Length: 240
Image (cartoon, rainbow, N blue to C red; front, side, top):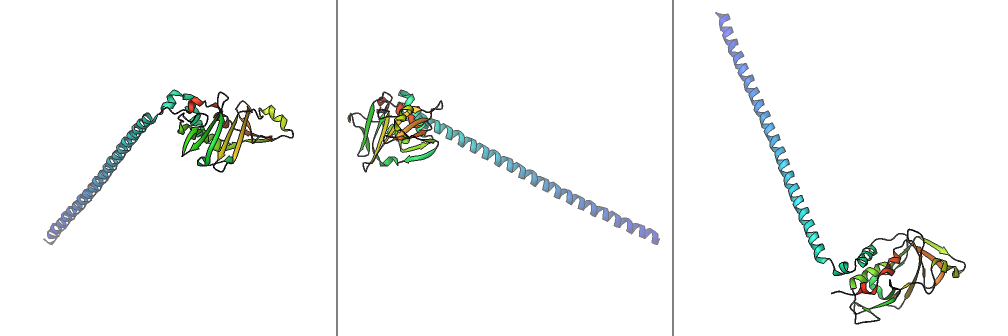
């Protein structure tokens, strides 16, 4: 009888233990499922957020490109269509030159300048009341933006080499003399710098030049300086 009761009690304990184990297992499974659901939800949120960011960025980039294109179409100057060569020279004026800087003047300090143009004519300009005029014919309206590009060439001059000559008459071998194409810049104080431009130094079109008719020193520019001689007076007129 005692043994029977003991077995009944033991069986009950075992059944209770199994039930407890089952409950624990189910609880752990529920916790694992909950963790899995949270993980999946987190991944979905990250994906949704990533898609939102991508679409926002892509839409912004597309709108900015369209805006830039619209601006470019709006501000494309008539001069670029009429004088594409001058437009190329304008763009080249903004490219940084090579070599050591030997001359720098802020553009706002230049009040007079002259350049020999593509037709070998010396063109003279003067600033009056913050407006550039063509001295040889003040009635002509001048393209102020293009004047600004020309000053890019003249106000920051650099050299890649310097040649010292014992006999300055040999400067003619470099295409330099008082008859050479020239540029002249003058500041508000009346200080004047004269730049004589000679031949190309090599196939890369490095160009020789001299300052203030001192032909005992020949400077070599990377070629950017020579571009200023390629403008013509027609390309400096305002079409507005």
